Image 1 (cartoon, one colour):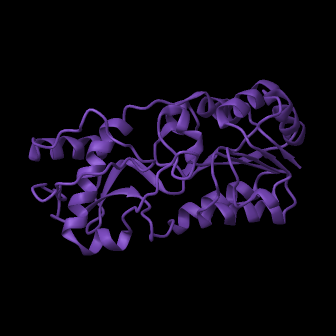
Image 2: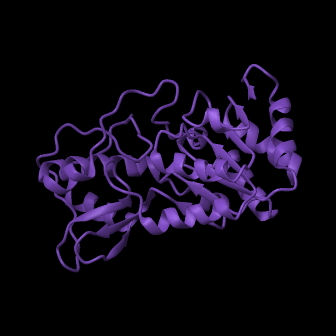
Length: 278
C-alpha cells in the first residue's frame, strides 16, 4: 500500500500507528531526517551531483588528503552548530517510552544523541571523533579543529559554504594546507566516518542486525536505501515478516518490500506517530 504526500498527514500517521501499535520497533534513519536541521540530503530533491572522495583516494594521495581535510574543516564549523529537529526528538521519545529499541543511523551528525536517544548505532561513524590509522589514538574533533585553525590561519570559511551530509565543503586552493598528524606517532588522521569505498565495521553491522532481530516492526525514516547496509537490514525485517514502514520524500530502493510507504517529511510523520503511540 502506498500513501502519497497529497493525502492528509494525519491519515498517514494513523495508518502507520495502527501497524506499529503493540510492537517493539527497530528504526533506521538516513540523511533525510536531518534536512530539517539544515543539513542537506545527498539524494533528495534539489541535491546537486557530487563526486565524493573515496577511501582509496584518501589513503593514496597527499593532495587528496589535504583537499579532504581543508573542506571537512570548513564544513565542521557549520556541521557542529546544527541542532536536533522535532523528528529526532520524536524518536528519542519513542525509545524512552519503550516503543523502539533505539536508532540505527546512516548519519554522521550526532543529532540522535543530542536529541536524547540512548541507544544509537552509527553505521557510518560520527564526525565528532578522529582516529589515527597507524596507532589507533582517538581525538575529539574539536581538538583537531583547533589545531587546523592554528596551523592554517589563512583558511577561513566563506560567508556561504555548500554543506554536504558528511560535513564536507569544496575548497579549491589547498596546496598550502598543513595537515593534522597524530601527536602520539605522527601517523595519518581520519575522521571516524565510513568513506565511499570503505566497509561498514563488522561489529557495527552486527549490532544493528541484532536490533532488527530483537524487534517486531521496522521503520525506515529519511533514507533512500541506496547504500547496501540499509537494504541488508530491511531484508532481515522482510524475511521475518515484520511490518515495514518507510517514510521518505521520493522513492527508495525498498518501496516494494514495505507494507506502508509514506511519501512525506520525516518530521511531520514522526511527531504525529509519537503523539499517537506515546
